[in-house]
Image (tube, rainbow, N blue to C red; front, side, top):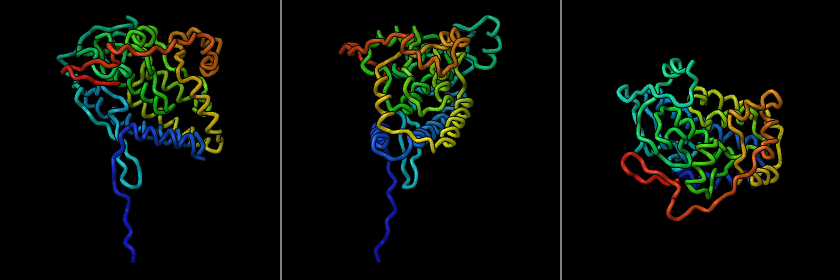
Length: 303
């Protein structure tokens, strides 16, 4: 009799996984909501890993696709975080009372719940770096939440944000003006996902949720998607819609949304965002200005 061999366990890097996911979304007969639910389940595992680090007073500071791997045991793909070269323990000796962009009335309560620390700035990969880290301000675990927000968008949309931008353009438009990748066109996304992404990549750190809340809200997104699996949409149309917005960066910041909340619901406002915020041109990076920054030990970390 022929001997049956079980599939051999193997590792995938993010690039291989991303290519497989893109091909599956183009060619598969699976509903887009089902494919998205599968990707959000992966993201939930990553969020849980970050939550574990934060609960032990550790921040990763370099949460990005290149630091995610997938172990396939023959039955399922298990995401793994790796490359902890920039992790940092948040020690009491590094605490500071400096607070940026926080109402005076909330400073005490905010610092009690989420102390900030004087740590090395410009640490990690620029594409996923929070404003407070990029500008060398005191920060905490909410810097990882920002990075996760960019990652959440990238894996949900299968599009890389800020592609081809120079450091100067990124600093001006993303870090200072709080422009973000456009969320228009993803009709198979639940409302909960739009709001979660927007809250995570919020420019002001105090407005971001913690990773425990992120895990809970990802659960809600997955449950909504599972509930509506029968409402399938054509993958080709959805891919075309996503590509039409891939180079745009016109989503409003939380401050802008607050100014419009009495006139429009959140999703309606997103739909009109393209006409409210003009597109920012995509620029080719200058050879002398690579899109990365260095870490504490002067290690180069690419996008």
